[in-house]
Length: 90
Image (cartoon, rainbow, N blue to C red; front, side, top):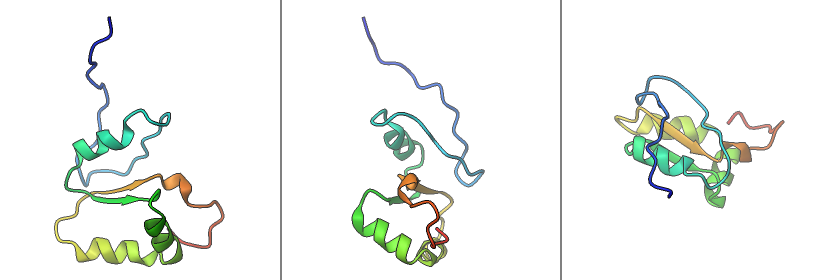
């Protein structure tokens, strides 16, 4: 009765625009982004060490991007984890 469905979502080419991908939990958003942008710099804020690193030192994000040749796309997974009103410029 139920088969595989092709996704009907048009995502921009790497480096073309900024966007948020919103949707219910556990529906494949991260998987979709990993498939679409395999060469991207991936930051997962569910990993405690990454969360601490970037919230305590938001300048590290720019430094990391600048130090990697050919990075045209950055995915920040779970960006909603950054506290509102945070003193960081993340």
